[in-house]
Length: 92
Image (cartoon, rainbow, N blue to C red; front, top):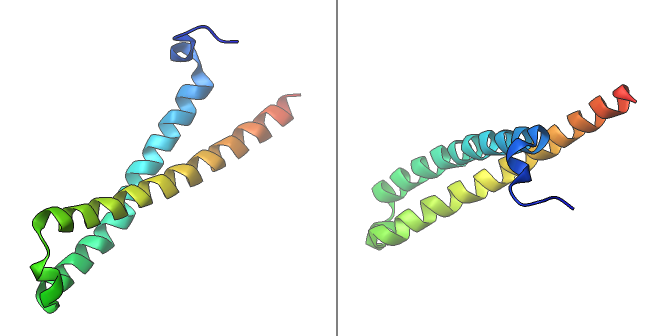
């Protein structure tokens, strides 16, 4: 069992966290841009969307960006784990 704060020096865990963070940033941007475009289209075309409060519009935008961040971070992390597994298999 690991002692507390032993993950600070664990290079594999830090590399995995870094890869997940990069994936989350890319995913938030990847989902955020189309949602921003949809928001602009909604402002221009939909009286229902225009009637929504600013807080709810921000909630909709942030929800999509959060979803994109989670999806992309998970995809990147699974890819990183596969690379690490292959590397360790070759080292044996």
